[in-house]
Image (cartoon, rainbow, N blue to C red; front, side, top):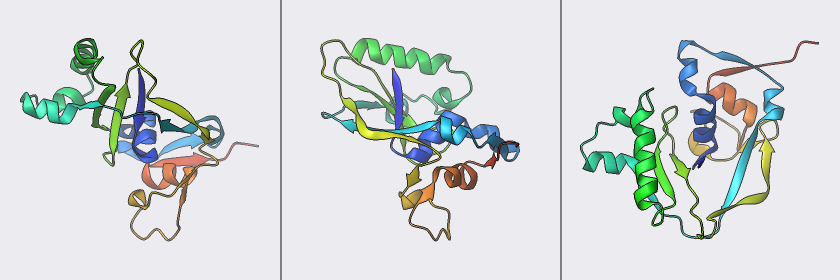
Length: 166
């Protein structure tokens, strides 16, 4: 099982838990930007996913059943879908709990099925060097053509990147 998102912002928010910031900015050491990476992947074939939001609507399952702090139902549902539909689908799509900009995914691999993804050559970039060009995430009034990884964390995810003590 591995996780992905359609947007670097959505991926970072899921990985770093945006709900931590409800009480105000969270201080993070600058070195983290050099230690953590954004990974890009290439799609090798058509990927089929089960839309969890749509499925829950069809089954009259309230959204909070899969979006709350208790993952019991979510894990059971994922296991069930993988067991019963894993050979027909590559994973699931769902709304991120921490930042609802674009979709999140959980993918599984099935024995004998060709891999759906490969790492993009040069696609592992530390957040310290990362540049986002998706203007859909930029705050109102943003004047640049890109946003650095540090700016994304500070401006959008409510982190305060702190320099290392000397």
